Image (cartoon, rainbow, N blue to C red; front, side):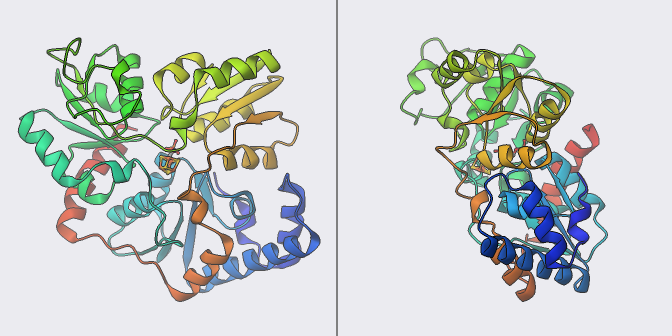
Length: 360
Ligand code: 13P
Ligand code: SF4
């Protein structure tokens, strides 16, 4: 989504935006400080010919003031591919900024917090993918975009939560390696009616429920998965949904596909972050329970104050939450932290990302 507020450069105008959109109203002094920071960032962007892309999980004060575009991983990859500005500032996590760099080798791409990672991206290395390829020769590798550039470079095609099933179905192969999100892989397997095998030694304490290549595992699997999990979406349980439905019988439950298949099955709708936003904006339920990163609920409320959103906020994404207005101002002014991807890695990763973008 394009945001006209990102062009505002006066604290007074930005203060009005924040006063209207922040659900938890900060004190006057805090409101003024945030508005001043946002005004400085929007001014710096114009001076430096920069565009800011902001993921749907950004904290509300940042989300409503400085990104020229907000969206899901897929939407922001598309925006990055079309970017005209000299500098792209990615208010999101490192793998997203790397994707922008993969698509724009001649532009400067900045990530405002150096350590903003992702538990899924950290769950797998390029060497792990090479080993999977050795074990399953000729089997195509689909890699979720929540991975680093060197892992994408070892892959045939990428996918996001918006297009994972379509990407798997686009491949003319009986077997597909799908990495690294265990739950997304299981959800895709269910959606496309495929069986799945996890060849790794199972690491998670609840893993006995799913066979890991031992008794009961499919001998000729359609999908070969990996055991990465998102630290946020792994927290949600079917009991949370049952309890919410007891307390709010007419609530509509939305779950991101990084949630377990049991949670997705118990929900009314599952889709990418933008798909969840569209669902809430275009339906008229008494209330909605969002099973995803909590800031997104605040951001939806900022733009749809009449909606009733229930959330479970015991686990914020520790990576997305590192991106603040303060750091964005400081690091845009200092031109850091610049994303660098080695050219050979970038070229190979680009092929996998472009193949995904071609699918739509
Ligand atoms: P989306 O691709 O749905 O925006 O999700 C990205 C993400 O990191 C979810 O945890
Ligand atoms: Fe990664 Fe989960 Fe954070 Fe998304 S919410 S960036 S998948 S850790």
